Length: 373
Image 1 (tube, rainbow, N blue to C red):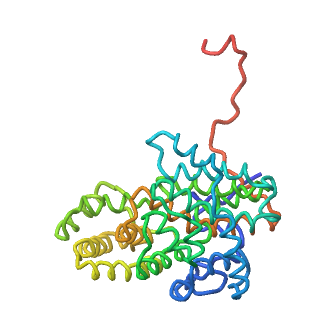
Image 2 (image 1 turned 90 degrees about the vertical axis):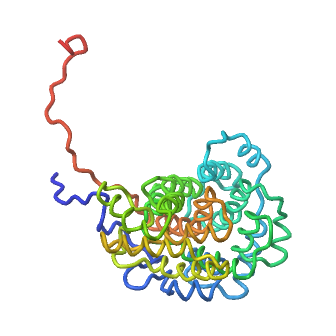
Image 3 (image 1 turned 60 degrees about the vertical axis):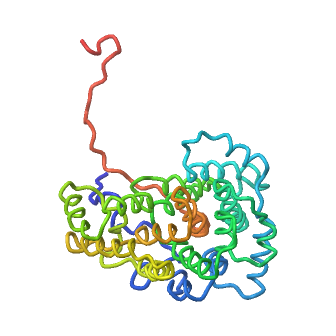
C-alpha cells in the first residue's frame, strides 16, 4: 500500500469533524461568538453550552449549578495522597494523578463518555478546582462559597487566594476562563478524543489531555513568559533580546500559533484586562515592557502574541502563584476536553491513522549464535 501524503505534526490535516468550536473567521463556541460569551456570560453558562447543544435556560442553569454543588467535594484519600507526593512534583502533574484517582471513586467508572460523559464532566469541573486549591493551602469552606451563589471564577479565585475577590477580579478571571475553555483540535483535546474513540472512560481521556497540556512544547508555559519578561528587564532591551533569541533559534514563549497568523483573538481580549489592572495599580512597567517585546517580535519575525502571552500576566495581576497557572487553565479547559470526548465517543469512529515507514528494509535474520561475528 502506498501512502502518498505526509504532513508532519498533522499540520493542516482535517482529522475529524466537530460541532463544538470553529476557528475559521471569528472564534465561536457552538456558533456563538466567543467575544459575546466572554462579555455577557459566566463560565457555568459556557460550560453548559460546550457540553450540550445550546446555552441554558434559567431552570437548566440552576439544575446544572445544583449538580455542580453536590459534586464539589473530594474523597478523603485524595488530599492525603497529594500530601505524600514528592515536593518537586508540579501541581499540574498532581492534578493528573488526582484525576486518575477520582475515576476509582466514580460509581460508573467504566462507562464511556457517550453514556455517562456529561455527569462525569460536571463532577470533574467541580473537583479540579478543589485539587488546585489544595496546593494554595487556603482554609476555605467550599459549601459557603456555593451557598453564597458565587460563580465558578469567584470560587476558584477564593480557593487559591483565601479571600473573596473584587468584582473586577472575578469578572477578569471569568473572561479568561471562558476564553481558555475550548480551542478545537489542540494537542490535549485531541489526546482526549483518541482515548474516547477507543471507548476509554472520561477520567482516562482527561488524564491524557492533562499529560499533553503538561508537555513543554504545547504552549501556555506561563513561567516561560514571565521568565522572559524578567530577563528582558527594560523596554529598551526588548529589541536586542528578541534579536538574540531569533539569531540563536531559541523559542519566543507567548508568540506564534499553529492556526493564527495575524493575531490571536483571545490574547487581544485579555490585553484589555491587563491594561486595566496596570492602570488600577498605577504600575505600567510590565505592560510597557510587554508592548516593547510584542513590537520587537513582530518586526523581527511577524509572530503575533497568543493567549499564553496575556494569560500569564493576567494571572500574575490576580495574585495567582506561577505554579498554579496551568492548573487554572486546566480548570477552564476541562469542559472543552469532556465535550470533545463525548462527541468523539458518540461518533463511533476509532482514531487510527497510518504512518510512513522509514526504517531498514529487507534485513536477513541471523541465529543468536552468529550475531556479531
